[in-house]
Length: 193
Image (cartoon, rainbow, N blue to C red):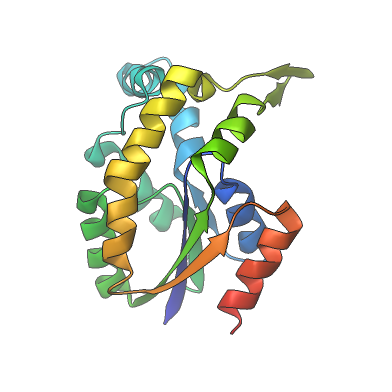
């Protein structure tokens, strides 16, 4: 049975960083919905424009697009030993797809929820930059009005979905306030028993 680790947390909680660290530690493929979508947004086609609009408004990506992106990922990458996922599922419809895949592919789903206060998350996001061509730039989805909309989506859709998932899957609640290294230690300790 393959173990599939779902990393959840409010935007700015460090879930992407922790997912990458866990993927490297466990030598498992890493599906990062946000990065996959940013790659599509860079394309000059209809799908790219649709994703750019979603990013501009802070809305959730249509389920069909995310589903196809995820299905393509598990076809391309060797996921027989497991997988680390960040940014999927984000709502009950997407969770149903994941549950269906877990049954079909005999996955043991493990939920890791990184808890961080809204205030700490906002502070981290307003100070977050990417380096592009040697220059520090703000991510398009880290503007204050977009952040607020993403927080609202997290509290109104993703968090209730996580609470539902706790009924069916082993779930670990992790304190996201400490350093990256301390959070990684908490995760490793939790999943290693």
